[in-house]
Image (cartoon, rainbow, N blue to C red; front, side):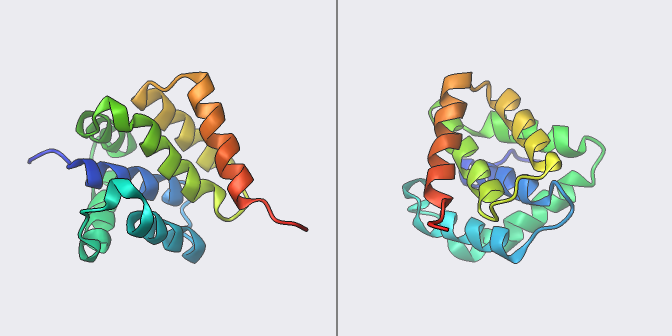
Amino acid sequence: MPGLTPHEALIHLMVITSASDRDMTDVELARIGDVTGSWPVFEDFNQSRLISIAQHCQRLLHEKDGLDGVLAKAAVALPERLHDTAYAAAFEVAAVDLEMRLEEVRVLQLIRRALDLDTLTVAAIERSAKARHRMLT
C-alpha cells in the first residue's frame, strides 16, 4: 500500500486528535474543515477528498498497528519543514472546543514525539492557539 501524501498526513493527525477521546465533536470536525479550507499548506488540496481521507484514517486506526501506525505513516509522509505545521493543525483541533481532555493531551504528546518537535516550538504553537481561541468573557 502506498504511503500517505503530506495533505493526508496532516489530516490524519487532526483526525486522531479529534478521535482521541472517542468523541469527534461537530466543532472539531468543523475546525478540520476550516483548517483544510483556509491554511496555505492546503492551498492545492481537493476539499472533496476530506471525508474519504478521514475515513481512511479511521480504518488505519483499527488495523494491527493502530495509532502507532498512523503516527509513523504521517511522520514519514511529512517533510521536516512541515512538522511544526502538522502539530499546529492537530493542536488547533484539540483547542477549538476550549476543553483539553486527557486523551487529547496524550495524543498530542505522541504527535510531538513522532515529529521530533522541540519544547520551545511546541510551547509557541500551543500559546498561539490558546490566544486565538480566547474569549472576552
